[in-house]
Image (cartoon, rainbow, N blue to C red; front, side, top):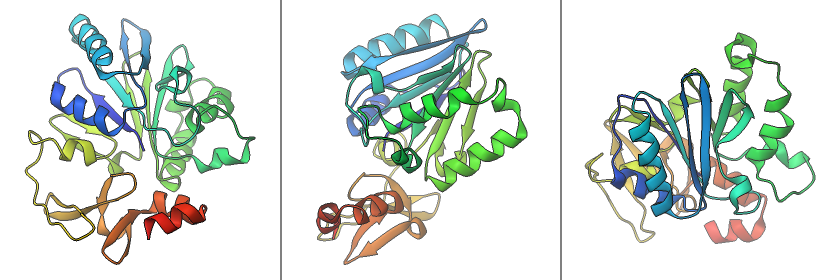
Length: 252
């Protein structure tokens, strides 16, 4: 399901956290930043070591810049550099996505990911300045929530626009589009874990119990999970499973 990390300039993020996020989303990595009115996207990394070396190089070179980092786990399209996030919407806007955009299924099957198709077929056709227009903000927020997705845009002036922000979580000054990687990091959260015969994880987050989806590994509140025989699955994976009988049998 991928993970987006928004790291403001004054926040710190450890190598351990980045490595854990990569380990859960190993199908490519990239990041974007803005400096002096110029947006830069650096991506196409297929190994963590290469990603981390370049990320720290840019972070040290541009200490006052906000960063948006993305690690991908493929759901649609090939695993290759071309489907690696983030994407340029224009020379002044970059885009990263976490989730599955089922609305792109109406297009012919492609080697492109659903995110890349969404960027090419929808975002690039929106009028200039759409991120600052209320009507488009409402549409993007609604779409992200309806698709169980999170969108992160970074502009050339360094402003990050996050849609469906509440579905992610903030830790140590950084925003994570989902919590399973960061919650597995001992430096971030002391976990209360209970196991069943299905090896289900129950994690305490701010006094609320979150459950692990045994398909994608994401953690969500119980109200957002489907449960049968002690096995939990998130709503996105359940929808995919119901559209694939083989997958559905695998889950249950």
